[in-house]
Amino acid sequence: MKYRIGVVGSGPSGFFSTEHILRLHPDCEIDIYERYPDPFGLVRKGVAPDNPNIRNVSKAFDLIASNERVAYFGNVDVGIDITLSELQNYYDTIILACGMETSQRLGIPGEDLPGCFTASSVVGWYNCHPVYHSLNIKLDGERVVIIGMGNVALDVARILCRPVSELSKTDISNIAIDVLRKSKVKEVHIIGRRGPAQAKFKENELLSMEEVGDTDIIIDPSELELNEISKEEINNNPSTQRMFEFFKKFATNNPQKRRQIYFSFLKSPIRILGNGKVEQVMFERNALEGPVNNQKSIGTGIIEKLDCSFVISCIGYKGNRFPGLPYDENKGIIPNKNGRVVKNMEIVSGLYVTGWIKRGPIGLIGHNKPDSLETVKNMLEDLKQKQKHKNISREDIIQLLKSKNINFITYEEWKKIDSSEIKRGELMGKIRDRFCTPEEMLKTVTNKE
Image (tube, rainbow, N blue to C red):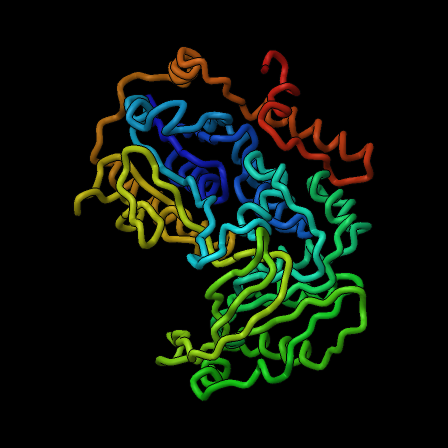
């Protein structure tokens, strides 16, 4: 008899957790649950289509899913189709690796005007996300303002400016490519509340901006003036030093090409203005106060305005409440102690978290590997104190899902969907032509309607 482990979520943290369990405990079987038919989470639905190398991590996930000790149940929304309590009756322990799909809101007046979008919606729009693929975006204005200084802001800016002739060869949504083909956008402004020394870009992501065809990357030299604490932060961090050198290089550029991407610092949006649609953003100039590596932006009372047609907030993600579990409203995570779920100050037996829902939207895909290892080690340590579950087989779980009329997808069926997307793409000269809805995916699988 083996231990049965349930993993809710098939993104990087879910697959890394599964990999660790396979390696560290030969007497465990793992079932991965995913709310959508297709696996891989943000690797498939979050990474920009012009960055295919990052998506190659899914090849490693494919090997994990193909292990005989692992089963995949796609198109099963745990908490909706089946309760967590019901699943707990069939597993010795469950790891929640459900990530974060909701964007943080700016929390300012005018945020709900047409033409104002969140990062998750725009990223989902060009990545064929089932919820966002049909988002009503019309790029019929010349200026876009992106709020935020992280890698997602760079992704969005690249997609808005990169020539359609290049994007059309990727697996970008057909809906998005049609809109981008008609785009009138000439300027994209990336604006952050703190200074250049505090920007959260990854070096190679920032450098890749220079590869965007027919686009100037520009910074006004005055934007790079630093206070003494920021100078110290740069001098103490080689990565920040290199990033600042990129900024200085951008500050020597002048607008010459078809489009421009501008970087601007020390500004916080305080209001979005417009008559029935976005027309202008009002900013307050900031100053930095505080110690090294912990400076905060403080408003100066100086107000600036920038005309634009669109605003995209890229200020981070937030987790959603999971039915029946505690939730930290401030951090947007499930409360936990080193991966062990905590409720009312006490550890909840048999429930664990990993990834962003554990620690918040911090770090890149690779950061989920050590994070999930911590959770798995603690889980396996706790498992030593438990008796093995009553004799429940994977077939019993399959019968449970069928009894609830859940039209689940196996990994073999996902591979059929995957193959179909690639074949469709070959006919169009693309890497793949993606299905955007669960219904389309299910129809490609025999007897799945």
